[in-house]
Length: 123
Image (tube, rainbow, N blue to C red; front, side, top):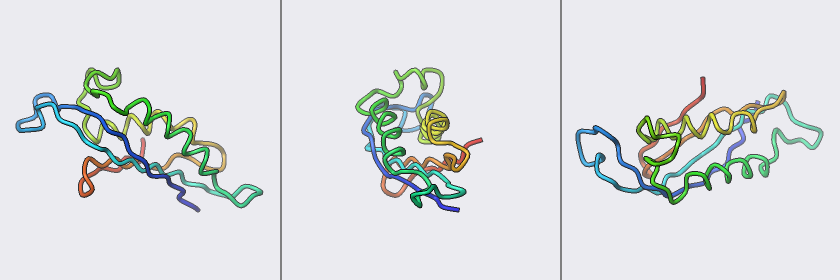
């Protein structure tokens, strides 16, 4: 088994509705994102999944989130754009594009700072 990943980032603003502290106020982050695909077997070239396949799919997601007010994004109109909810949104959006009979999307890690983040493994 192989875990194949790519790391990227996006910048966006948000606020956490009803949060009892500073994060209820509008602010921004440079979110780090790591997307991991688990390959069960290799193809004839000896790859689980081409890095380019992962990067192209992830780039579309980053373009969707980058330089936005996440509270106004359709995915977060009814839920807080927390790191947890962002990781679920990215995972669910990438799941079909990064799954086949040889591999599947395994996890998405989203970090608000270099020292704080969350990993979602899907459902």
